Length: 155
Ligand code: 2BA
Image: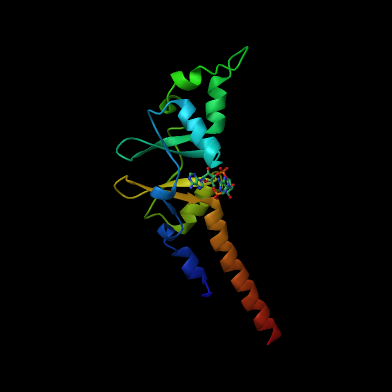
C-alpha cells in the first residue's frame, strides 16, 4: 500500500472517501413515516438522508425521531405512521459538508455526527461521508507513520 504523508492527509479530496448518493439509502420528504421506518429497519441504519423529488437534500430522519413522534401520553399511536409524513419529523438542519471543504473541516464536523451529507457548490446532493471512512483513512496514516518511526529507530 502507498505511504501516506501528512500533506496527503491535509489535502485529501473528500470526494474519494464519500459513499456516492446512488449507494446511500434515502427516503423522500413526502413518504409516510411507515415507509421511512421500514427502510430504516430493513437497511439496519439508524438514520438516513431525506431527499426531495429533484434529488436535493432536505434533512435526515432517524428511527428515534420517528418513534418519538408516535409516543402519545398513554399509548403508542401507531396510526400516526400512516398519517404523518417524513418532512414533519425529520431534522431539517442536517450536518452538511461541501465538496470543496477540507479534510480537517470534515473531521471537525464528524466529532458530533456519525455521517455528514455532502453537497457540491451548487447545493446538489453528492452522497455521505461517514465518520468510519475518515477514521479508516487516519488509521492508515497513523499506522504507516508508526511503522516508519520504528524502522528509523532500528536502523
Ligand atoms: P448507523 O446506522 O448508526 O450505523 C453505525 C455503524 O454500524 C455503521 O457505520 C456500520 O459500521 C454499521 N452498520 C449499521 N448498519 C449496517 C448495515 N446495514 N450494513 C453494514 N453495516 C452497518 P458507518 O458505515 O460508518 O455508517 C455511519 C452512519 O452513516 C450510519 O449510522 C448510517 O446512519 C449512515 N449510513 C452509512 N452507510 C449508509 C448507506 N449506504 N445508506 C444510508 N445511510 C448510511
